[in-house]
Length: 304
Ligand SMILES: C[S@@+](CC[C@H](N)C(=O)[O-])C[C@H]1O[C@@H](n2cnc3c(N)ncnc32)[C@H](O)[C@@H]1O
Image 1 (cartoon, rainbow, N blue to C red):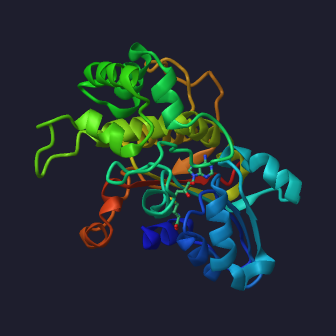
Image 2 (tube, protein in one colour; image 1 turned 180 degrees about the horizontal axis):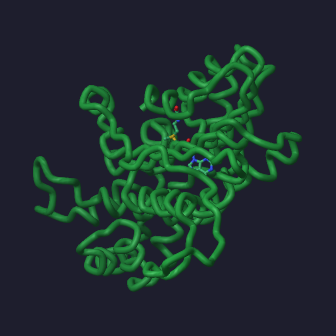
């Protein structure tokens, strides 16, 4: 949703902005075009491949960029290291990049046969194969239910545990076959592995914990009038964004029937998107992966 991102963040020449999820650097390019001349872009991605790619794509703006292979939870300390106090705009376009699905070789897609890794940052943490090998049937079932909202979570977990007693489940194709099972795929229906792969990926990358930490710190890094724009790809992420933004706008913790506010909480931001923005049919046709995207944004209040 590049047009919506630009319209929401309204970047202007000389501004300092952060793209916390560089990916293919498409959004970062658009932002740099608009903050030039004189602007600065801090670009983060937890995947070092994305940073290597961004260095090439954004080479024309070399003097105006700081590109770092870091998790976006590290944005506050990154700004402190760079001596930057406040940002005019922050973008987080969550989830996987096209590179992850199509070229990383890390088993993100059940349509390919690759090692079951699923780490966005291959430098740290257990892989999906480690989780499949080490978690109990109960833990796997909980993970599939909680992060994949999978109805048959426990049955699938039991099938995995039975299979791994015979041989390690180490590739994406092995896992997809196990989850789908004979006769369980139907044309036109969501592939049964979709939710399981999503759940594993969320767990491997601690996506929801990191998003919560990011949402707690990022608004405080904006200058008054600065804007934060988040694009979420699944309902679990979007719920966290919606709730965090609502708390910033309405922080009051007084009982709902209290005649006047006595808690003293002061709103930090206003929500720019009472309803999330969705991609146009034309964008979904061009990029089916974008179909479930929801864009939400806030503006930091001037009175802070
Ligand atoms: C949907 S892609 C971004 C696409 C990008 N906006 C573009 O224009 O090409 C999401 C990117 O966010 C990165 N990412 C996900 N979680 C992250 C986190 N916690 N910290 C930093 N990067 C993260 C992924 O590695 C991936 O490259």
